Image 1 (cartoon, rainbow, N blue to C red):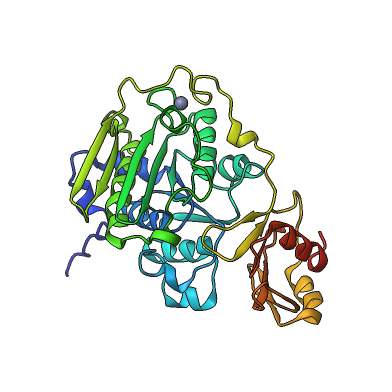
Image 2: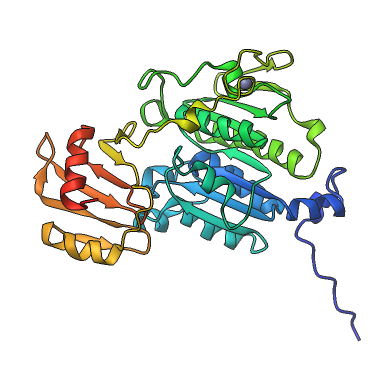
Length: 358
Ligand SMILES: [Zn+2]
């Protein structure tokens, strides 16, 4: 009689590594990473962490999958774009297919001062062991930096645009935080973005590889191996620079020295024009809970509107953009909305008040 063959171990090749014996693999399985933003960087890092065997993964993102994302956002496919699925849910679904041992928790929300602490610390998967930066803007990065320092959570920063990328790990109380190095976000519109300057797919793989590696070091308990430099790469121009962070903690840093968390305390909530898009985002109303089916029913009188599990969207027949194009409206269950075809926040707020009425 043939003996039953042993159950193949998914992590066999990883366990062969010096720092991934059984104990550390178990430690990884008990750990929790939170990816804030699930665009190119967030997708790639979440994919690597899920395959490596992280136990819990919270994925926060405010956007829907679009066809232009597929060139570099590796968790998404054409169906997600065709259906306009929220990125957080599409990523959660895909993570489940890659590794059913991972508990993924998608959060469809704009990570903002009003909800950031609740999203990060009070979710069903508990407090994360590391925050992975998958955002595309400095405002949110400084908000994450504030949270990381305030709550003593390691934060793996990365950013990529065009053919170059940067990465740095913030160990609160130990290494410089973002505000030790950069006074604050660059003025709006002063920096190239992926929407204006494009981005090379492979540069995402490289920098998210560094990011996931840093997160894994922390999650398996090899904090001593965490990179102590700000790394800057441009694989297209063949450049690679490392800035040694030793001695760069700023004794006058408002965040990690002064413990003033200005980005977290921002009262924000003003409508904001979305970078690179003809659209304005309206922030959620605190405590709002929209009945999507009922709202779609009311909006049907104003144009073709549909409700999905995640949102209501459609076009307003009675409104026109400045150039005569259509005005679109997408509303999420927490009251957040995207008004498209508009760049003026005041007009967007008026449209929101008129049709959503919150
Ligand atoms: Zn600092």
